[in-house]
Length: 332
Image (cartoon, one colour):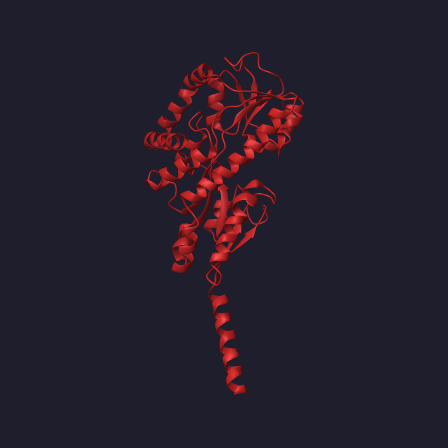
């Protein structure tokens, strides 16, 4: 009897060991530091949910920060299987994602959640297949749109009157030029000092990034508008995704896609709303919004930068049309 009991225990232990051995382990490089809204509100809860549902089947090992990858190399690190899941911004992946720059166009979407849903639906419609031939997006997000933050008040909202503004990219720079401003390309790490020394007049950045860069110390006049965001994604390589055991892929698929893209955008909007509200509540800060007439005027002025993008990027017109329709549908 004792021998049989021991044999039974040994068999159970072997079965448990086999289950652990068969568990698919995936390393996730967040790129962003611990405590960031991306990590705390999206990546860590997402990984926990998959780990809870996938015990013995799939386990995600989240590595926070830039130790294993950074925004500049995360795409290649995922493709080369150094890590199996990454969080990245398409604009940082040299020239691979021109159509995804639809998210950077000015005055095309208002809220991150609207843009994120539109982005996912454009992808699922097959309009971005040429860009996502090497990877499988698990979430797509339209990063929140940028407003304008100045060290000093503008004379008028009719024109930026030559104001020097730090811009995040070429598309946004063209929009600033068409609005009468002067775009400047500076790394974010140099933004605070440039504003403090008045070598620039302002910066173009989303509310969600306002606190992390301590902009309340160097900007005091804010135009709350939507001059374009950026594309982001949580992704796997196509080769790694296709090689997943069916049970593991089923769990990941059930926790990916439009629903989690929506959650991502919602979380970023909530954080941006909180930072905007804090600035509005300060007696040291002034936040202004465009009137309907001013918005119409700005839309007319930035139209050439949108038209130039559709001219320069093959396949851009149907992408923009579908994106606008989906964003408006959800936003309404």
